Image (tube, rainbow, N blue to C red; front, side, top):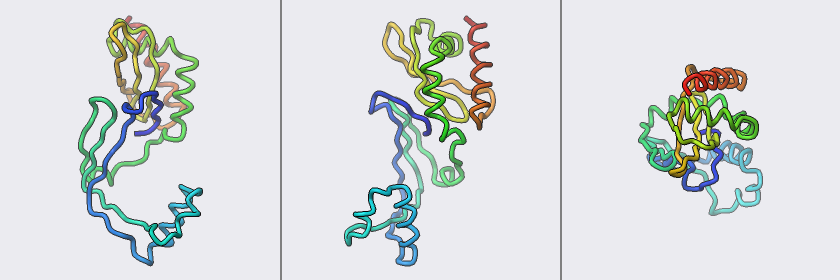
Length: 174
């Protein structure tokens, strides 16, 4: 899951990949090393130790846990067909902007679209091309909410337009 901004470590999503795992061949090692070091440049000291090696995992299934009470299984073929979320690189900026500049809109989303009548505050905690998640403050404690966009949003500008449309809708409902 992309774009997570959480303060509770146990509310962060994670996944467990299950399937056969085998050491990469000698022919593949140089390429694996290059890719690994591009992602983990500070590991250059360790990568050539004799007890350091590269393995290939062929996922057959994935156990996804998106935080408290949100979990599912994903088949390996579904995982291989999945595409990276188009908002991955802009998600943190969108979250920061919405939380800093549009707290009133977040509460409107919670009350008008998620039917959380007692919402007193809300924080956008995640966003992806299909929608966003919020942690809503209520007199009964925090509540997790997910709202979907009417259409897939693949750019920051598309998200902005969708959020404006949603806040107009939310304010009409209230």
